[in-house]
Length: 266
Image 1: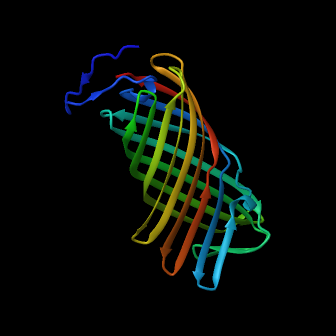
Image 2: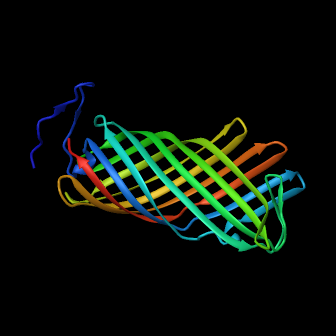
Image 3: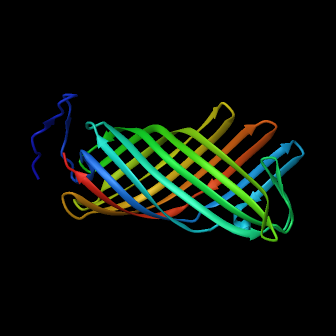
C-alpha cells in the first residue's frame, strides 16, 4: 500500500503520516462507552488520633456492581502530539441496618439504625499525549494531564422510620497523572494496546493519588466506525483534613467497557 501525500496542518505546518491501521493516524476520535464496574469503597473518619472509624460501604448495602457511561474525544495535532478529553460519572447507593455505631464528619450513627448511603463520583480528564516512538504498526507514548475527581457522599440514619442523623461530604480534587501507553496494529482492522498511569498530589487541605491501568482491543468496521472492548482498573486514595475532623477514601473501580468510536480520518 503506497503512502498518500502528506497533509499540511494549517496552524503548525506539520503533517500526519499514513499508518497501517487508521486508528494510529485519525485526526479526530469521539468515543461513547458502557462500563460494567465492581466498585468497592471504604471510608475512614477520624475525630482524634485515637478515634478512627472505618466504614465499608459494602456492609451498608451499597451496590457491588454498577453500569455507567463514559464519553471522550481525542484530537491528533500531528504525528507526535494528541489532546485527550473524557468524562465518566458513577453513582452507587444502598441501605442496610448497622451492626455497630460509627462516626462520620462529626456525626454519630447509632447501632441498629437503618443507614442509607449515596456515593457519587464524577471524573473529568484532560491530558496531552506525546508519541516518542512510532512506526506504521506501533506507537509508544507518554501522557500527562489532570483527573479532576468530584466526590460526594451522604449518609442518613433512621430509627423507626424517623431520620435521627445525617451527614455528607463533598470534594473536588484535581489529581495530576502521568502515564505510558502502547498501541499495536495486528492488521488493517485490529488494534490492541494498553496504558499504565499514576501520580499523587498534596494540595491545600487534601492529598491523594490515583492509579489507572487498562488494556483494549478494537475492530475497525469501516472508515469511520470502530467497535472495541477494554478492561480497566482504577484505584483512588484521598485524604481530606477538615480540622478537627479528617476523612479518607479508598475507592477501587475494576470493570469491563464496550465502546463505539466515530473517527474522522486524516
